[in-house]
Amino acid sequence: MKKLLLTAVLFGIFSWVSAQKYFGEKISETGAVEVKQLPALMKDKQNLNVKLKGKIEEVCQKKGCWMKMDLGNGSSMRIKFKDYGFFVPKNAAGKTAIIEGVAMKEVIDVATLRHYAEDAGKSKKEIEAITQPKEEITFEAKGVIIK
Image (cartoon, rainbow, N blue to C red; front, side, top):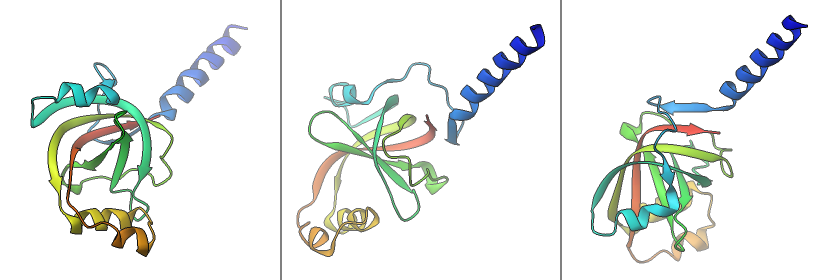
């Protein structure tokens, strides 16, 4: 009976640990704040080192070289990966992620916005409709956990 219980406990622990997938630097969940709090945290800052937790909204469908998270204020934040050093699975949309790195306020030019739209699989018409640069909060992650 003890062996059966020990086996069940070890299986449960192994299943929980293997359910988390790490990308980039190995980070922990400790100290992560909800991604929807970021706009308020950055109110008067251009850059902020932070650890965030939230739902993945969209992932680059070419390579997994970026993903988006909902900021809760009607906009999304694009997350790129430090030094283009790692990617995330293209099927990660809808999963919860913990990201650690630097949030930045940036103006994204039209060519880059169109490139992102192409990566996301948008139609030619949607891509051509992008005609203005856009100010947004972006994020450079040094590590990601996907649950």
